[in-house]
Image 1 (cartoon, rainbow, N blue to C red):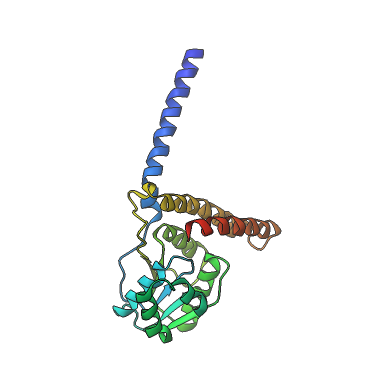
Image 2 (image 1 turned 90 degrees about the vertical axis):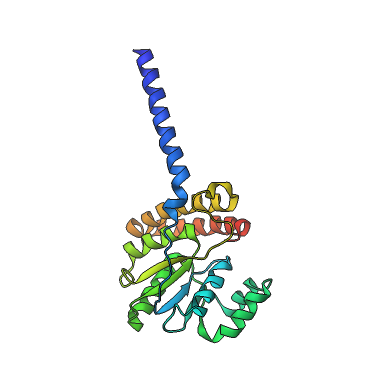
Length: 224
């Protein structure tokens, strides 16, 4: 009986280990659901410290992917220029197209950004938008749009900002990509619980406060 229990435990351990390894190796593919860009009404660059988001947004604008010839950028103009201060080429591009960039003040989190976008799409009767963000962030953006917005479904595509540190197949070989991915898994679970069951509650406010502190520590180290 004892040997059978040990054998069963070993088999179970091996099965769980195998499944965990498979999930870990494929996590980059699971998180990165970015798409090939196509012509849309407007281009939206989500907030964050990764300059590749605004760089890609500008590139899409220059290649006529926005029929409205417009970018919505989450952040102030001062923040934008501070972010790109060390990239002369990008700084010049922004200066030349700044009149086409609508700067939105800081949003607390991704859900706030998506709620704003939801309103913009409704008020302007947009039928298509491009959302530019970091690849491992795309799964959470998709999840939140499909579950917690009213007017964005079937009207958006998520385009990769193409950061140099990301590879969906070998993300675990880059420390930044690895930590970013693990953080995104936690955020997906956290956002599901928060916006499904705890919205506008005292517990939700406490969780938000703790989450912001953790995010600030991680963001300062990962530059995300």
